[in-house]
Image (cartoon, rainbow, N blue to C red; front, side, top):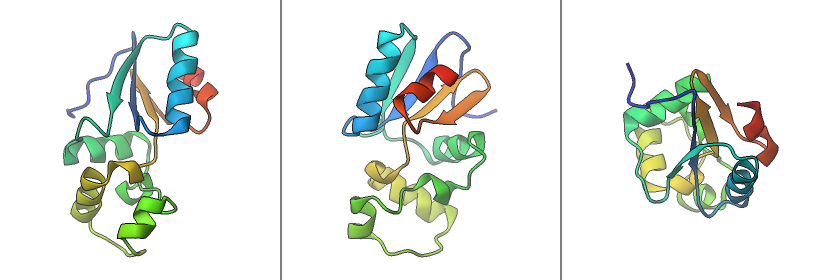
Length: 121
């Protein structure tokens, strides 16, 4: 069993509070009256287990959760094949490089591409 608790009664949203897409997604979800449990990744450091679990729920490798086009990634890192532990440390120390928002409800997990994606869950 993983560390991430999910519920069919609410949506857990992992997001970066500096992200325009995340702000729009939250605003849209609230306007639709969706019950949201917010986790701002800039304020709440995710554990390695949580990061791996999120990637697994999205059917992605951990490295695929990293937005390598993000300016913070380009500033601090070069494109390499890193170990899982390296990716975890990179995300934990630079949460803004993680692709987000990620929404979970029950057994469903999605990477929100547009704010209206939140209603798919």
